[in-house]
Length: 268
Image (cartoon, rainbow, N blue to C red; front, side, top):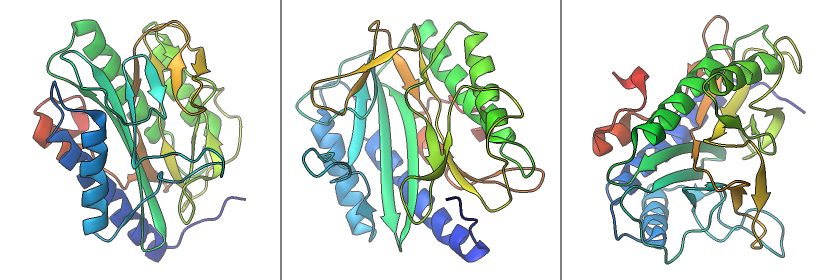
């Protein structure tokens, strides 16, 4: 069931989304060759707890196999839900970091794909295209449109540039729960799906591959990788559906002030 948020609730969600955005910036300070993904996870958990938040992903999922960490850290061909661990970052890696926080009973959820050191022009083009598709999707998140308008905007932009748009994983509503209705696929047809109404809050999150859109799940039951081993990118914002123009609650600005790499032209 979709429920519309009051302005009071939206302000609480903004605080949570901003805490996630600032947590990303703290993590970004440590992203360099030789640093383990476990170190990044520890930085994030420490920052979230010091700011009175709760890591939303840690312990999430089935009782027999809950997600074990604060961050999902997915390297290169890993799309989402990668486990932090002993892996030491290498020059040229692309790492997608997904972070969720509960603060004062409301959730924020933000993803960003980082470059470790330098990367190829082709890889940077993948990242920029994915960010562009995110904002094209957000432009469609306005009262009176339908979910399919968001989906089609993401899909057409990425597929026109030759990328694979992941079908098996989707964006979602969020608020008092980390995952609420409606689902927000990154592929679809304009004018289809649930109608958008002012006050709906969505996490829009394109997951885009350099090769095929097909993915598979590793034996850990969580980590999703590209079926052909190509690299992947993932960006996510929390937005409020409004009349005319969607409102973005999260920001990549804190991240890009640290990385000095500008992928998000909205920050310029």
